Structures are given as structure tokens and as C-alpha cells.
Length: 417
Image 1 (cartoon, rainbow, N blue to C red):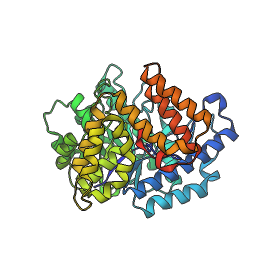
Image 2 (tube, helix red, strand yellow; image 1 turned 30 degrees about the vertical axis):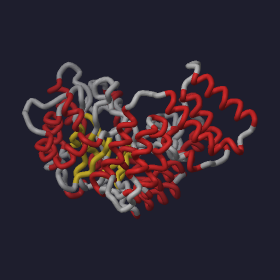
Image 3 (spheres, helix red, strand yellow; image 1 turned 135 degrees about the vertical axis):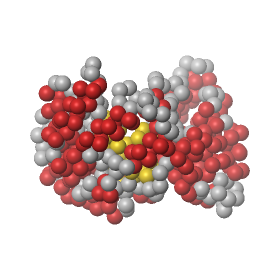
Image 4 (cartoon, one colour; image 1 turned 120 degrees about the vertical axis):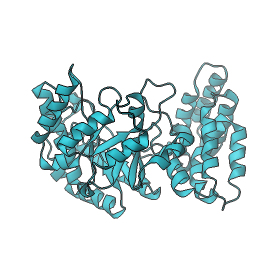
């Protein structure tokens, strides 16, 4: 069983993908962006390998305008060597990758042009996975689409349009329940006709439950029956409702207690894709807790990244974590991340924020210029007088850290959470 996350790495410079607007989509600019994004993907894979993460959703934006007429590059041939190297890295390190076309990729629309564009987008995603040399276990997740006033007819249209797809696309497609229109029961009924595996999404199921009253575990087991050996391990999506988000909005982090309650319900040999705003941070948390039960010594790298953030929320919790990690052989992952979560839930405290900023500035100040010192002091004073935000101080500190290539600071979650 693997636990993964989607599309981007938080807190690791060099992993950011870039895009452009349509009017700037010249061949030279697209070529430059693709080269940059494939290198960013390489850095993401390197991070995942270092952190024992073996399940990862690839961003649809790595090739800008990948299914749009604006991009006429034969990118899969032009960047063939890069794709081959990335694919070998994925396979050699036992990483399973997937993709998730966006909300406008709709196969059951009554509009033929929408269907045609959906097919083009699915062809792009399939071509990307093929360029990497991925087999049928690398999947593309798709929602059923809209209801268009008649769910039964819209469902029939999806099944009718499914044969328009190439064999390669059909072998990769997996269908997911959503939180507005199609329950897991609806999706299963469609999948029985298309032969597609079904992805169970727990949050979508909680928001839009099926008419048949089944538990989450029962629905996951029903979905498991749709997965054939050639499809690889069953895949599910796990997320939690964001506290200040609209219904269906993902939480800032995966909180441990509800995840630990859910985890034993998951069928054996199932890959879990976390859909959460802090991406790899939650993946590391869940892996280190439920899969490994990491010892204090194994959490030192995590603490190095979290420490200034925790200090910016509470000096007391900061001290408690340091004390917790003193016994290097003790398995304390649950306690460690629970303390970090407590810090996350605290309101902004000016004294704690200034204290943390001063600690970070201490790494920079000796080599800082007069202009940087003056800027820092002005920002601190403005923050204390409630004329500026803590984010402006963090931006200045990060700029100073990058200028000096201070990786210890650049990799700190203090700048990203």
C-alpha cells in the first residue's frame, strides 16, 4: 500500500512548474517552459525517492497548452531523451504515477465540440504517460461530467461516447464519484458497462452519498471488484473538508486522527492519493505515522523543516517537540505530528512571529547589507505597529536566504505554510 499526493512539492526550491498565457504561447516560449517543467518534474521525483513516496499524480500543466491548437510542438519527440530518463527514474524507483484531466474534460456533454475537446485532452494525457514509457497501471482519473437535466440520459451518453476513445486511453481511464452529481453507486453502474475501474473518493461520498446505504469500507470493496490485475493496485482518494473552505474544499493538512480511523478500513494492497493543500507534507506525515511509526532520529529532517514554523506559532510547543525528540530510538511520529498540528491550529501571535523571524534573521544578519538590515527593521517595526503583515517579513527573509543559497532556510516550511 502506497500513500501519495498530487502535482506539486511544497517547500522544495526547483520543483515549481511554470506556465504562460495564450498570447505568449510562441514555439520558443513553449519549448523553454517544457524544458523547465521537465526538470522540475525530475526534482519532484528526486524528492519523492528521498522521502520514500511511491505514488504521485503528475500535473496536467507540465506541457503548457498540451491539448490546445496553440501548441504545435511535437514535444514527445523533441524531448524524447528527457522523457526516457524520467521514465526510467520512475520505474527504477517503483513509483506509480497517475494524471487527472480537469473539470472541463467531459465525455457526456450534449455538445459535440465539448466531446471533441475532451478526447483531445485525454489524448494529450495518454501521450504524456506513453512518452514516459508507463504501462497500463499508470491511470488517468475522470469524472462522469454533468447531468444536463437528465442524469439517466447523460449517463447513457457517457457509455455511448466511451468507444470513441483509443484503446490506450480506455485502458488507462478510471472513473471517480464526485460531490455534486454522480455518486459512487452511479459511477459503478456506468463502469460495469465500460469496463473501467472505479476510484472511491471518501469526501465526495460523504457530501453526496449513494441511495444504497453502504459503509465506506463496503463501497471500497465494491470498487475493488472493478480493478483487474492489468490495472495494478486499486486506487482511492482521501481528503478532509477544509475548515474555512466551501463544501468539498480540501483541508490545509490531513489531520492524523480521522486518517488513522479511516486507514484500517482500506482494502489491502490499495494506493491512497491524498488530496490536500499541503501536498507532500501530509504524505510524509501519514507515511511516517501509519506505515513506519518513525523513530525520533528518523524525524530529524522533518523537524529541521518544521521548527521555525512551529516556533512562529508557539515557543511552548517548540520546546515540547525538542524534548520529545531527545530519545532518538523512540517511535514518536504520532506525538510529533500531533504537536505540529496543534501549532497549526493556533491563531497568529505577534510575539511568537517576531521571535521566529528574529531566529531566522540571525542566520542572515551577519552577511546582510545595510539596505537589507534597514528593510528588515522597517518591516518588523511596521508589523509590531500593525501596519504590515508577517508575510512581508517572510518574503524579505526568503529573498535574503535565496540570495545566499542558504538551503537550510530555503527548505524550511516556515516560508510555505
